[in-house]
Image 1: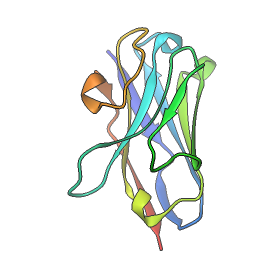
Image 2 (image 1 turned 30 degrees about the horizontal axis):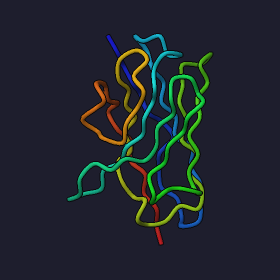
Image 3 (image 1 turned 60 degrees about the horizontal axis):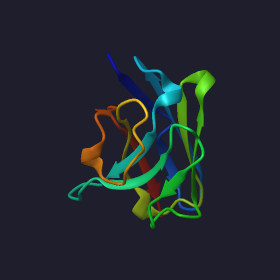
Image 4 (image 1 turned 90 degrees about the vertical axis):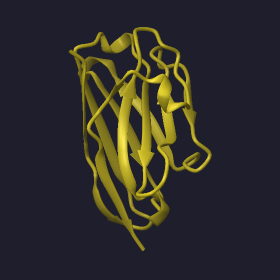
Length: 125
């Protein structure tokens, strides 16, 4: 059974930083592309970033490019999202997601098969 568990969210002032973690179980982590999405109240789920299972490709949404960094530690079955220069508009529930083995990744939420429960990130102005 695939499980994804996010942690590291919370309340931070504008300009601050947070690092989200996503621990995966029930998968061979090194063969899984990991994605991050977010959803603010009343809005659709928005692509944030993904890292290819090889680690060689990282893709970012336009709204976070240059501020967020995605990474992975295969030894810990964990994907990370380092968020710097946070803005109030980054406030949302953040979700990690993955697809099947050697799935290449996508900016489309519907392309992912497994999701974490989500974690709240709130940025105050």
